[in-house]
Image (cartoon, rainbow, N blue to C red; front, side):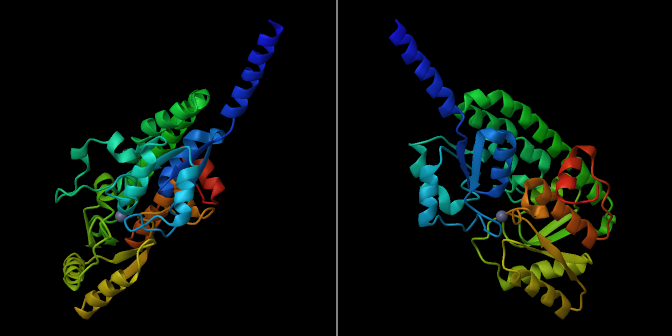
Length: 318
Ligand SMILES: [Zn+2]
């Protein structure tokens, strides 16, 4: 009997020790890593395959990525419509460990079509739409670490509160731009949800929803005509895309007698360097909003109380 008790005690000891090891989470894009870290807290150790400046539409797994996929306990990705070159590597993992495709498990397929009926994966551009993925990600991480599930629920609720505050603030910021200037011209078509959610009257892009097809001269001419017709004051480069597309657009507008500036660089498909203002999801959206608002003639409103901690961390005046 004594022997049995000792064995049971030994088993009882071994289990919490195993469970307290942080869950090794691997995500494709940084925005998912941010969500998993915010929800998982100390229960997770999160890594993203794609860093700042990586274009998820074009990203192809390297040899070292296969090892990282192997080492992970669970994997999060967005959708084949985004990480198009990752599909085979992710499918190979699916038989061996939990792999969550966040887009397909969160949204109804018909909800994610642009005006031309193309599926658009850029859901992180609308903070409220992005927050809809929180319950899926929380349940997925909680299933892998049931002893952490209660803490994850609490942190998930706090993260959702911050994203709701961010969503309200972005809408208020864009509303300060003079109505006629609420037009967003970018290198690729990543801002449909941003435009729809935050009152941008029209958005135009030189390249399509994916960056896999290169923009043509005809695309540049068409967008240049839009810029001139609407007297758009500024257009934007993107951190994951070669700036030469937008430079060619600006040259074309000027050649046609129009005036336009480059309004700055937007973080369309990747967050910024770790530790920089745009190095987390809230900062990515804050930074895009600040850049767009300043270039199109608006004024940033004060940040809400729910983002005060974030602002202090990033040295931003609330
Ligand atoms: Zn994109």
